Length: 389
Image (cartoon, rainbow, N blue to C red):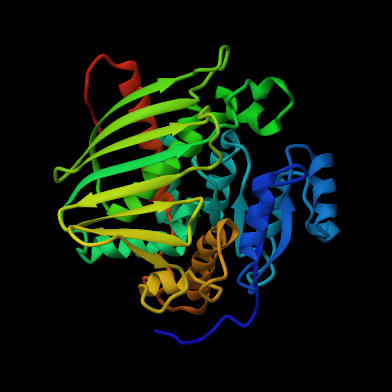
């Protein structure tokens, strides 16, 4: 194994994320947070005019401020390694995920893609096959796995601290679509509630995929069957804004998932509770610097981010001393940090470590798409349980 370090910054480009994009700015900030990565290129919007205007805002060099992702792919491919981008970050609406992701993978570029990765399992499998064939690094920004205390929770499960898992409860309530925001000019609401752009689901694809990924990441459990109900509470809305799901896991554990974007008074209330025979844990996204452990007997134990009693994975994901809160940006940054370190390892010819490989992959993204499809199948069925396999 080589101990050589890459003697330059990683270069990345971005597709989407231009003027008015909330998530595009989050990705850019996350990508450069390690101090060893720089944004050098982009095709930031759906029209050449908007794309180039956004690139100018970001001070991108004119010769790498592209009018389309196709132009970006052609011209970046013509550059030698070390000058071309090392990876592309794709943060477009869902319907513009598959084509550029596949094209860049097939051209040998590493990719970071927002979730849900594509619209169908067929697309997801095609993308996974291309990733394997071309040997590229492919990360998916299920950013909640980047929180240090989520990594600590995962460590507890893996070490057997909770005993045999029996019950998982995961919720993600929001209220931002309580009214028909898609009719008010709200750009995010407009595309997220549009089946042509968002896919076959609304809230389930937007935030339900985070719940599925969080359960899988922390517990390692695989879904055996599910029973789902999708609801559109707002009159005239084309996609679901609320969902309830019962889950059976292989090995006997059972779970409940509730996601909603019409939960009055809620902001971004993702939370998870995992119950085992020897103990339980709970974590809340709005208080992400703490994870609670509940022993079979005795008081609740509160573990705090930044302390040296935490696992190696939690400590690697920590960037400030205890008492200084870290949150959303840093969690996103941890995904990009591990993707970046894995790319660096590849460039200098060494195998990445297990800690560097700790990020959601194309396979996690593909499982999320299958989950969406099974939820829709279950919601349309009169059968109580829908097998997952």
